Length: 124
Ligand code: HEM
Image (cartoon, rainbow, N blue to C red; front, side, top):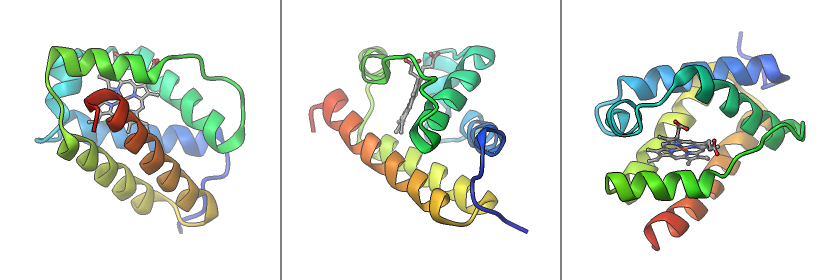
């Protein structure tokens, strides 16, 4: 049975499942695997911290997401549909695994951050 996102362990489950989908995704997978050549052992724990901080105010995350994505865009041009697809995959992952208030909140937060990131990265 599905539950709400209750703790860091649930965040880890969500993040792992999301990036499993990302890695093989035909639309944006290459940005992670070929362009950025992501080191997953470093990236996944960073993303646990990021979402743990957003949903449960853990105060763990230290990073500069806006700069990272600007650098990525300079290496390989991104557009609005890349970001929309990112959010589509994120929402799909959340809905496959969880249900409840925190599940709704994380999708909304992801959408808002994505809009801001798109604006800062692409200038749109
Ligand atoms: C087309 C959309 C996106 C692409 C292709 C993308 C790709 C990437 C890549 C390649 C990295 C760097 C990984 C590394 O350090 O090696 C990264 C980092 C990150 N991304 Fe994204 N991303 C996208 C959208 C988003 C969105 C919408 C969010 C948040 C809601 C997000 C949150 C983050 C965070 C928090 C980091 C870590 C930044 C840091 O370490 O300072 N990304 N992303």
